[in-house]
Picture: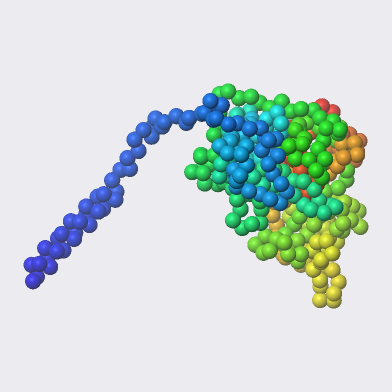
Amino acid sequence: MKKSIVIAAVLTAAVSCQSLKEEFQPVVTPGYDNPAPYRYYTDADFGKIITIAELAGQYTPEKPFEMPKDKDILKGAVIKGVISSTDQPGNFYKSFFIQDETGGMEIKVGKNGLYNDYLPGQTVYVKLDGLTLGMYGYKTGNYGGMGMVQVGFSDPSGEYETSYMEISYFIDRHVFRGNPNDLHPVQPKVITEDELPNAKTDTQKSNANVGRLVTLKGLRYDNEIFCLLYLDSNKDKKAAENRVFLSDSNGVDTEYGKTHGVTTWAMSKDKMTYYIEQGLWDTCKVGSGSTYAKKPDGSDLTLGDLKGDGTYPGVEKAAYSVSQYFRMGSTVIQIRTSGFSKFSDREIPEEVLDGTKTVDVTGVLSLYQGSIQFTVNNISDFAVDGKPLE
């Protein structure tokens, strides 16, 4: 009996040693130093290429759908465009814009560092079957209007009409790159006020400037911003008691008025912390519209009530995007900048803020809830007296 036990133990040890030996064998990576070259694509690889305007024309507000879904023009179709944006300076996030002669379209890829693989001026093909055509930023009512028709996946949460592709397997089966050695950098078109889209009714179908890289000249600062703050981003972001609007209707009885004292293009976490600890937003109410958080005595709760020891412990410190308002003639343009961009904390030139000088700006023109928004790639896309900012 003892002999059997010993033999079994020896066999077990042998198997264990073999297992260890196999576990720590070198990893074989054939061809690692000479990977297969990435295949780049041309028109000849696709049988049916439609324009961005044709694609946008298939969309009906509040009715996103997975393509092709009974749309004959979309069956087996591809859109082709040249990349007009870059996420390298941080002002675009997990997506890029492409454009053709009929308009521009956001492709919701869902990955960071896209500038490594998707270069400005590079041709991109997007295979539409299986993707979702939706709109971001549509709002009904007199104070609403159009957003941006865009391409992505369906959103399982139902909160948005599209979501990011994210998984490389799916991205590689829908997004195809042209040769990066054959770049065609976009030359932005200088457009006039008359060529701006009607933000209540236009899409890429009806105005070719929507979604494209354009230049606007002579914008004058409108002394107004918009920014949405959260007391706790881990809680319900739609709850009134968790939201603070830096807008034209909240706390404008201060010396800062509708700008709320924000003189930078956006706010990093450090800059947001600085602004709030200066007490600039103390009179701003917590809430939105006609629904505001209340104190025990029934009066409206303000950010100043959350000051505590001076560090505002009840207010989350985070980076925030800011829309700075400008005017092109009589048309309001919201220049929206991410709080995570490399130039978020750059001061807007004083002569622009005080109205002494105007600014020229190049960026992607988009729509959001019936307003015209503008997003630049980098700080150098702003120019004062013809000189780009640095």
